[in-house]
Structures are given as C-alpha cells and as structure tokens.
Figure 1 (cartoon, rainbow, N blue to C red):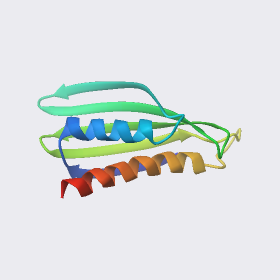
Figure 2: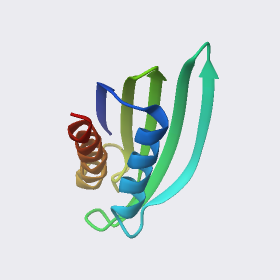
Figure 3: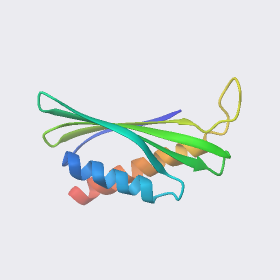
Figure 4: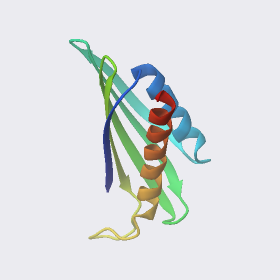
Length: 115
C-alpha cells in the first residue's frame, strides 16, 4: 500500500474532472469502478475508486481517492492497494507506486496550472 496526501487551492469540480481524465486516460487498462459525493454544511467530499492492470506485477491494482473541499481549500488523500502476489506479505509494489505517481503528477499539473 502506498499513500499520497496534499492540501492545495482550487475549484472542487474542475479538479475532480481534471484528475478523473488524467487517471482514465493515463493507462489503457485504467477503469473508474465507483464513486460517492456528499456535501455536509458546505463541505464537499468525493470518493473515487479506480483500478488498472499492472504489467509489472501481472495483477490488478486499485487507487482510492478522497477529495475534501471547503470553498477553494482542497485536500486529497490517495491510497493504492493490490499489486502483490505474495500470500503473507507484500512484495513487488511497483504497480501500486506507479499508479499513485500518476495521481500525484496530475495534482502537480493542476496546481502548477493554477499559479
């Protein structure tokens, strides 16, 4: 499992669309599995689950994203799972790290484009 978290400024819907496009277009096998959106007292929360095939590990890995927004204050938490064929411990987590890196690069492109 690998994790990436980051707080930044932006427009919630615009960023969520930007991230979705980057992830689904970044890999031929990347798929959007499901999502959930909620608003609580003006605070927005979006959860997204993506999956893709990892050629490195010959298996599928998932990317779970939670985006929290209040006005232009945004916070993303992205966690990968899967990517190992071992029974009792994880080996070969390169597929997870690669999927998470694609998410992190998307965030950086968005933030750099805002400045």
